[in-house]
Image 1 (tube, rainbow, N blue to C red):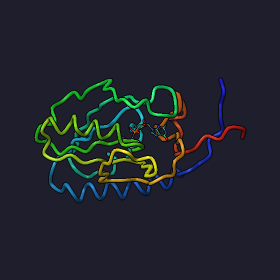
Image 2 (spheres, rainbow, N blue to C red):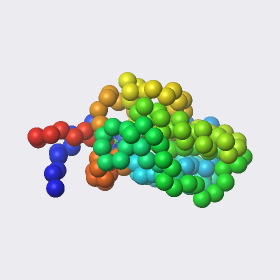
Image 3 (cartoon, rainbow, N blue to C red):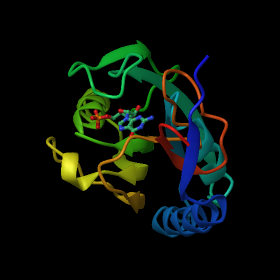
Image 4 (tube, protein in one colour):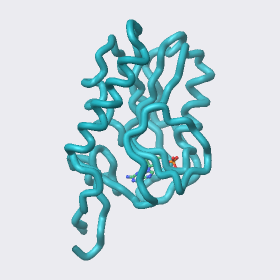
Length: 176
Ligand code: 5GP
């Protein structure tokens, strides 16, 4: 199997610092209330796990699995729900936790689906955002980092199912 050497784009330390700030912002905004975190599988699992630990509120957790990429590095242009939530979000303070907003199609589609279920509020936390690729505008309430138009891996993000375990965000460079 071909293995490419990843280059660090955002270090483990920088990710941890940023997540702490996002957790504090969420804690402040929802003081005294419960929040329901919706982790968008698979890519957001690591971000979601670390973010939850920095939210000092009663928290519930649910999962949704979406796919738009298959095994490649370009979106197929359609979003499929592979796995739905297990609980109702009616009248809940929902925070959707996503790994990366690229064209915005995935998150826009998901937000529309969830809004139709009557949450009290719905916010979006995304670790990464590629502004140069954005076609479907979405408001990211809690953003980790803006990045350039590069295909990134690590910290939950994969290339053909691999590299999710890396503790940092990296880019793949052929030939090193
Ligand atoms: P969008 O619908 O915004 O174009 O794409 C969002 C989804 O595409 C993300 O949830 C993620 O799964 C995948 N994606 C977009 N850009 C990247 C990238 O640079 N690296 C990886 N591994 N996945 C990406």
